[in-house]
Length: 140
Length: 140
DNA sequence: GACTTTTCGGAAAATTATTATCCGCTAGTT
DNA sequence: AACTAGCGGATAATAATTTTCCGAAAAGTC
Image (cartoon, rainbow over all chains, first blue to last red; front, side, top):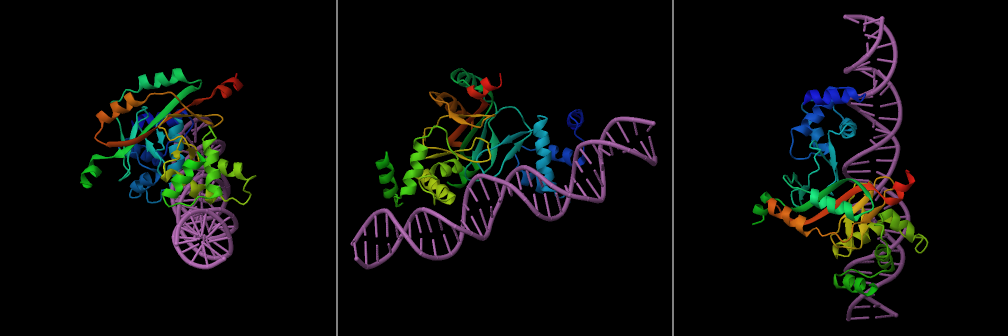
């Protein structure tokens, strides 16, 4: 995995730096779709001088080489996902966590849409909103 | 229509003002899902002293009484829609326009998701991305 | 391994959509 | 017509993201 990103960066003319590897590693080893701020604060202990701008600049590169997708689940900040499969996401309206909806087959639905529009479709994002199991319990 | 919003505003304790009616009218008579800025500039000629803050404040009220939904199709600003049906939207990656995808039945898809998650689902937004017919032509 | 070139990371400032504040004024009620 | 709660407009504040600038570090070359 570390090797994948090293090769990919270099082949696209980007330099391989510890910061870039670290940011990707945080994303890769996380299921919580962290925001830039979350990535930043998680790396504070390892790279005390890391700048938020570096997080943003790196994410843009990772998106460009297809290692990360950007989520916009309607909060005040973006979330990032190292899983670039096109899977739906769901956000808890109470605690704000964003989860994957795995094992969903969207192909039929997407194909239906593609037939009904004159657009040339290149991608899509499905966001669901609700209350996560934990928050349901707490409100009981 | 003018009557609907008048009654709705008043019944919820909001005052009925020319600005509020005008902002809703712009949204109601538009298929293009305007941003706050677009609403603002469209009303410049009629209300030269209108403030952007008024647009935002009014939209928040309209959302609260269920007359408007907020779209977050991944641009740098929100879009607003006076059609509060839960229909999918599609954005052109070239010119930025946002269109409705009408006549799409999402119920089956949504029900499938509802069965597969422990969340209590309360809503969803489907965004498609692609190239609109006009921009397809231009690029040929 | 030293040299060169190019890109990078960090700090700080800039940008920009949106929200909050404050105050004279207006809508709605009596 | 008077009263009062809420409003509109101007302005400042907020906050996420982007840009700028420069010393430093990466990668290719010898």
